[in-house]
Image (cartoon, rainbow, N blue to C red; front, side):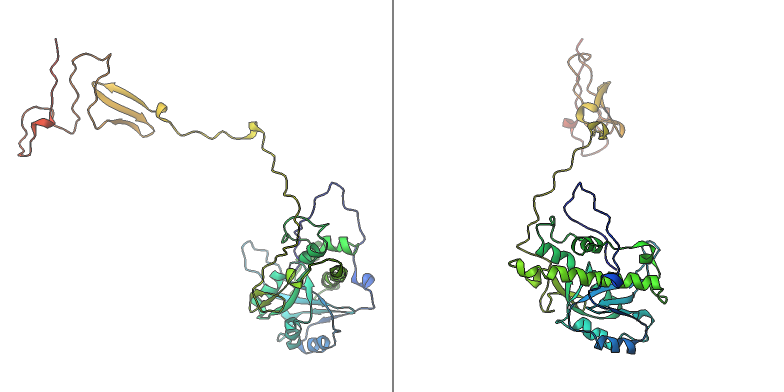
Length: 341
């Protein structure tokens, strides 16, 4: 189930309308297709496959519930030079033994778009490991760097690659979101065969460019998924997609700032000038968002206040100069200013 996200150099020139790709018309040699629902028949047909790379793709029934769990892989598509196999594993009584062997074989290239996720899902659903997989987007960026810019790992869609290197567009439509667990209709079979065969056709064009590009190494675009772990194409060491010779080109221009009129003004937090203080009979009252609050310390009257006014003693202290009935009484805690006549 190839991804549709793409990344490339943006151009103002519209892409031309290209003819639709069909494995029946664009195959370089007479090609036979086999839709298989029995594991024994699958083993027989897989044993007859010619040596060489295989276009690789998967399909599974979509889950229309938001946040729902993905359904397991239902169909495995393999396309060689003269054979296309549609292996409907969800209706088989067991997973074909020969299919496990082909996917495990490091001498057989399995190629497609966004297939790292496909291989990980195949292992998650069926416990199958896949070695020597070629990601077509990485291969294209490695051998045709002058055409593709941007981040090395940015995806390139199968249809875009097919248009660029084969000269045909790929039809999608409603078939892509159909139920792949029921017996496949002729339209579904054609769709599945086209996806796998398109991957093979793109690989054939790109791999021919490798000899003309120095410093190209399979480790730049090939990987394996062994027991759920992403390793190099031989399935030995950890793999991360990277090509030290790839030139991503200049960085994208900075985003234009919005119209100042459209920018919302963020309300500023109240500052000290927004907090007022008033004096009522020598008591400081603080007015802020929490309402008026009495100051907990005595307030000295301002210069223009009534001369000789008494200092207001906080309410939580005795207002009398008489000694309270408490042995801890300290006269120094209480002071009274007499009014000057």
